[in-house]
Image 1 (cartoon, rainbow, N blue to C red):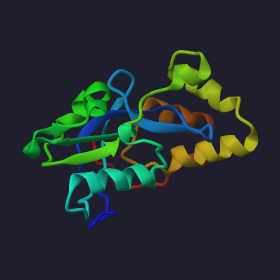
Image 2: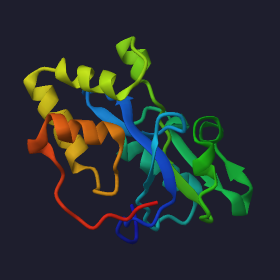
Image 3: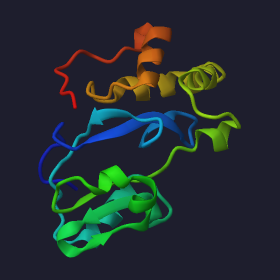
Length: 171
């Protein structure tokens, strides 16, 4: 639950389509090694306490445990171990508190191949038609500010799935 719409006002973070989801799509995650700097979207939450906001995000994202939720609340001297472990840059958001889906890059674990743009394209090419279409739709529906090497390669390989035009805010 958010009290304002998501807007491209979040911190500039390194993100990439380098996580293989349960439905075989490549999803966005913060990755300080392979991620490209992109402006992120933020919204003011509608919760009065951090625990409720974390639980809401966990449920919305279908996470079995709260470990997949990263948070930092400098004004309370709190931050999640997951945030510190996976997303050191995200911990320094400049916000009084922030929560996000803190899932990591699992590409190599799921594909037995180190992540690269070429490996990501090969992975997508190996999907069946239905799964590939869902994966391309997911990438194409990401906000226009999300300009990563994988997205550029997908747009070149499958131009019919290019995202709609929009004003892009750069980092």
